[in-house]
Length: 169
Image (cartoon, rainbow, N blue to C red):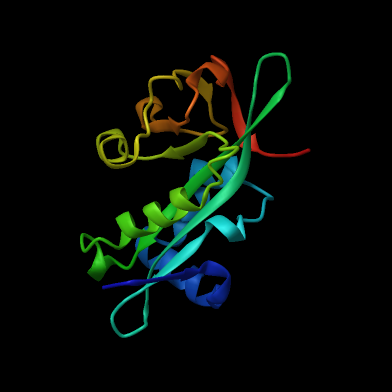
């Protein structure tokens, strides 16, 4: 059974090593990094999973982002991910436990829409993410439109079109 702890309690160098192992060092070129560029991850929504020997098995980070609509209005959102698990531990439930921890930590009294880039079948089935409302959204780099997913209690608040990027007040 894994133990979930705040990501802030983990040495940042260990987190970087895990991310490199899970995604390779070229991960910094991915579009998701451009979406959250210059932002700090949200400590209250970011976690680490430890294995049975208290070794770092996986991490999840959440980020403040916004969808800027065609009129220039910014709609704040939470970008979920990366969800990273050590390659030799993938498929053992660490990723699902981390996703559950992060999504459960979001304040239900004022939940911002959550976005991620990922496998629609997996994230819709287990966590309620969908690409039904993201067809007119753009990202600052290459991406597959069907993998841009959103989860919200009220889809009516989502703009039809816009550019996803860092949340700058």
